[in-house]
Length: 418
Ligand code: LLP
Image (tube, rainbow, N blue to C red; front, top):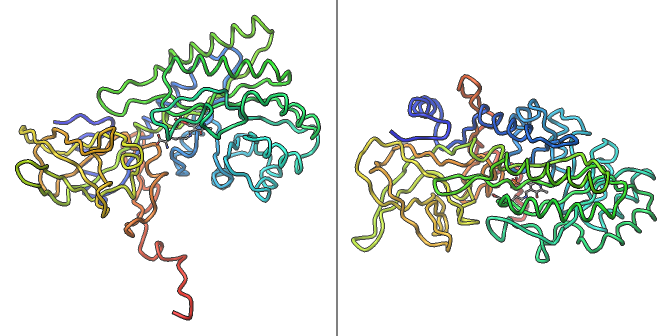
C-alpha cells in the first residue's frame, strides 16, 4: 500500500472510474491548511498575505484562497484581469510585472489595483498616468539572490528583477519630480530560499527602507521552500515567521518605525496540494545494459518542471506488487528531454518502484504549483488536461475541462491563397 500526500487508493479508483487520465486533482483542505500556516505568522505590526497567482491561477483556487483572508500578487496585467473577472476587489491585488504596457497601466490605475514599480522606467510610466501624490510601491533588488536553480533565483547582480538597491537616490529624485509617494517597499529574492536567506533579505530590504521615510509596508515576497519528495527539507514557516518578526521588532526599537508586513507565497500554498493522475501507456526496455522505461500518458506539455529545471516529482505507480524494479519514467512527447525521472545534471535517473503493468495508474505528486500554470500548451497537439478539486468531503468537482481539438485549432487562420 503506497502513501500519498492527500489521495488514497479508494479515492484514486473512484476518480479514475469517473474521469479519463491524465488530469490534475487538488485538495481544498491542503490549500486551506497551508494558508492558515502563513496567516499565523506573528508579524508584530500586522500582516497582509498575498497569493502569487502564477503558481496556479484557476478561478476556483483563487476563490478558496481568497476565502481564507488572502490578498493577491499578480505578475502580469492579464493575471489582474483574471482576478477582477473572478470578482476579487481591485484593492486586494498588487501588480508586480516584468513588462508593463501603458494601455494596461491605465486600466490598473482606473480600477484601483496597487502597483509595484520594478524599474525606473515603470515608475516614469506610472507617474505619467497616475494622479499626483499617488502612493506607490517599488520593488528593489537587494543585491542578494536565492533559489533552487539559477532559473528560479531572481536577486543579485545577475538578475534583472527590481531596482538595484544602490539606485535609491535616483528613485527618490524621480518620485519627487513626478509627485509620487513611495509608501511600500518590496523585494523577492527567489524560489526555494533557505531560512537563513530570509533574515539576510529582510535586513537588506530594511536598510533600503531607512532611506525612504514614507515607507510603511514591507513586502518580502514569496519563496518558502517546500519539500516535494523524501530527502528534501521544507522551510519551517514557524522559524521563518519568527525570524522576520524579530527583525521587524528590532528595527522598531532602533528606528521607531513599525512596518506592516506583506508576504506573497505561491509554491508553499499549493505545491503539495496537487497531483497529476496519469496511466502507464507502455513499458519498453533497451537490453541488459540499458533501462526499463515506464511510458506514461502525460508529459512535459502538461508538467514542464522536470524538463525545465530537472525538478524531482514523486511518481507513484498504484501497484500492489512487492517486487521492486528500476524504471525510467518518460513522458509522451516526442523528445528525449521529456523525462520525469531526471537527475540534477539532466541525465536519466532510474527509480526503484513497485513492479507495474500497462494500464496502471501513476500519481505524480507535488504538482499543484507551476505545473498546470506553466504547461507548454499543446506541444505535439496534446490538449490541456482537466483539473479537479476535492472539497472538504473529498468529493471531486471539475474546475477546468479537458480542452477539445476544436479549441486547440480555434485561433488558427488559413490564408485564402493556400
Ligand atoms: N513574488 C514574486 C515577485 C515572484 O516573482 C514569485 C515567484 C513569488 C512571489 C512566489 O514565489 P514562490 O513562493 O512560489 O516560490 N516556476 C518556478 C518558480 C518561479 C517563480 C517565479 N516567481 C517553479 O516551478 O518552481
